[in-house]
Structures are given as C-alpha cells and as structure tokens.
Image (cartoon, rainbow, N blue to C red; front, top):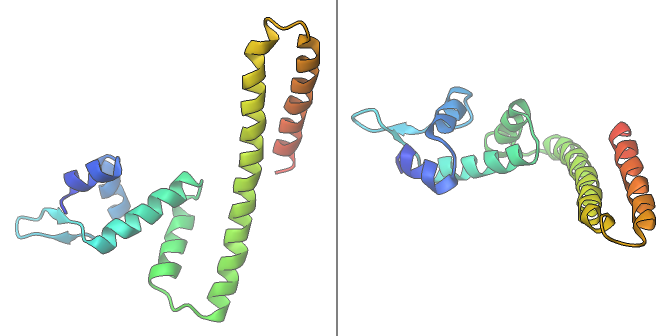
Length: 140
C-alpha cells in the first residue's frame, strides 16, 4: 500500500508516516521509483503505534514496546517486565478515566445549576467533584 493510501486509511498525515520511519518504528519497502510501500506488517505496527500514542505512551516507550513485542525473544524476564510496565500504564489510564468521569459529571451539571431551585445542592456536589479532581491529580 502506498503512503497516501495508508494515510487515508488510518486518518493520519503522510508526514507522520515519514516521521515514524525516521524514528525507526517502521521500515517500509521501496518500489523501483523509490515510493514507500507499506506491507501488512507495517500497517499492523502502525495500528499498535497509534493506539499506544492515543493511550499516552511516549515515542521512547513505543519504541521499547515495538522492539520487545515484535523483535525480541519473549522469555520469562521479558514477560515479567511487560506485566509491570503495562500494569502501570493501565493504572494511569484508569486514573485518567476517573478524572474524565468527574469532568463529565461537572460539565453535565453546570447548565442545570443555572435554572434549578436546588442549584445549591448541585453546586455543593460539583464542589466535591472539583476538589476530588485536583486531589487525584496531585496524587498522580
């Protein structure tokens, strides 16, 4: 698959594909006229990269994951390190979910507060959510 086709398929700019290649994350083949040709393996790697990027992984962390998952032997030590690493990332995502859930609740209640008789109750509830949000953030 050519770069512009893959770009459309994955919803990312061609420049991102080139950047990931420069970073050593993918290695597309070249046609006779030097166009990049992305294989199914490249597409699979890119999908993993994009998911990990969406989850907040740094490019350095993504490089480590790609190397370990696709290029390194999967011995017991590798698996143990992967469990620790991914469990930590899962915990971070769960904390983000909790924070976003609080933000959604606060936002859902703000319009209600403008016209409700019991807006003081809603305000009090939101104040608790706001305080909890910042306590969670500090506890990161």
